[in-house]
Image 1: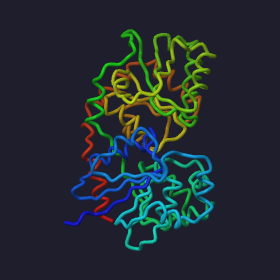
Image 2: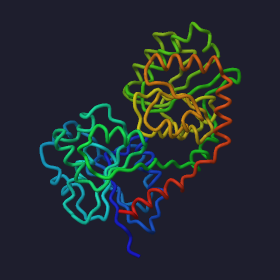
Image 3: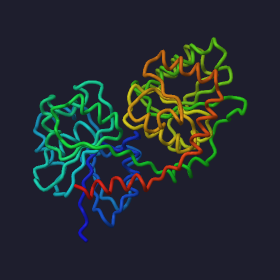
Image 4: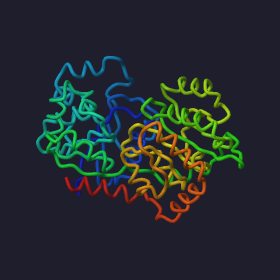
Length: 372
C-alpha cells in the first residue's frame, strides 16, 4: 500500500509544550503507513535531537534572527511556500499558528489537504495575526485550509466565537504524551532534599510573563502572615526571560525559605512525581502538557481556569480549578492549604481512574489523517 505523504511544518523545536507533544506524536506514528517529513523554520531547540530516525527532518534557517517577521510579511505566502516547502504532499500540517499557518495555507497544490493546528486560547482577534500582514490576510488564510484542529474544547469554542467568518470544518484532538517515558524518568533521584515534614509543591513551565509565576509568589507573600505556608515549599522548574525578575521578587519578599527556582531540567518528571501538589498559574494555556503529565504521575493539581483544564482534571475531580485572577489564586490556595485532606482525596481519585495510554491518543491522529 502506498504511504500517505505528510508534511508537518513548525516554527522551531524549543522546549515548549507544543514541541514536546509533537516529538511524542512522531515517535509513535506508524511510519510503515505514513511517509512523514518535519520541517521547521529555525533549527533551534533541545528537541531537535529527539526527532525519530524514520522522520525526514530539515530546517530552513540554522538559527533565529531579528527581522524575520518583517521579512516574511514583505512577500506573499505562496513565495515562502515555494522557497521553504519545495515538495508535494498528500497532507500539509501547520502545527503552529502565525507563520507556519500562513505558509501552509498558501500551498498551490489542489490535491493537498491543508490543516492548521491551534494550541492556544486567543484573548482577542489580533492575537493570531502576528505572522500575517493583517487580520484580513489571516482570515483569508484560514479559510483556505481544509480543516482546523484544536487541542481542547475551549480553544475551539474561543476560536469559533472570535472568528465566525472562518467557515472551515473544525475538530478537537488532544495532545500526545509519552506516558511510559514519563513514568520511567520519574523514577530517577533528584538533587534536592525534600523534607517529609513539609508540604512540597511544584510548578513546571518556561518562565514567561503569561505563565503567571509572579502571581504564585505574590500569593505566597500574602499567605505568609496566615501561618499556612510555614511548612510549605514551592519548587519552580524552568528557565526563560522572566527568571531574573522572579528571583528578585522572591528575594524582595523574603520568601527564599519557601520558594526555590531550580532552573531548567530535561527531566522534570523526577521532581513532579515526588511532590504533593502541582501548580499552574497561567493566564492562558491550550491543553497544558505539564498538567497532563502531573496527572499521569498521580499528582493532584491546583490551577487557574485555562483552556483544557476541565478536560484534564475531569471537571475538578483531580484537583482545584480557580478563576483566572490574582485574588482567586490567593483565596484558592488559602482554602486548599486550610483543608489539606482534599489533596489526598484528589490523589485517591487519580489513582482510581483508568490509566492514560499514549497509543489511544495516537490512534486519534491516525484516524484523522486517514479521514482526509
